[in-house]
Length: 213
Picture 1 (cartoon, rainbow, N blue to C red):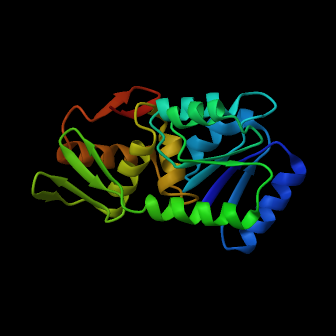
Picture 2 (picture 1 turned 45 degrees about the vertical axis):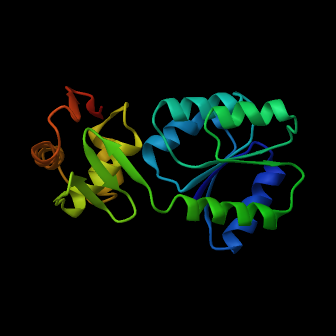
Picture 3 (picture 1 turned 180 degrees about the horizontal axis):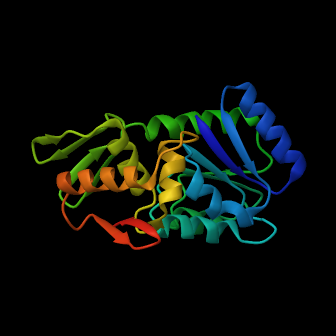
């Protein structure tokens, strides 16, 4: 499990990161909430732990913006706000769980594991396709569309950021990491995906990148 922790309390952030890592959970701790969108363009997470009271933005606004951009990563809100109205706002904006401070670290761990189990088998329907993220399959009706490993990874990256324009550098970083490949490789894979998927799925923005509609 890989978790993004958005928490500006230094002491709490450090202790949570240490506790979760002891329990075999990889943690990316973000104490500066202004970096949230940059992080999401360059990394992938299983769960987000989100504080509501931050230095520069309201956690509720970050949650709303992530959902509007099509980012479906489960969000566990971790906050000192205890009012029923605060919980209602967060759940309406797409939160998956809500835990108030103070809390027992074990309870946080249990909730994270429950969210992971709940999200394991996700099927996304888009443009007549059924994309099973757990089984890593794509179906059009009863017909399975066969994708190579790289085609699948590019499709997943576009899905995670659907509605957004993603650059070729972002795709290269996500799919190939530190392996050096040219941009023409991406163009080839995108061309292959377009042959398999409905024509309107992937849009090209010259000089900027691609967008999954």
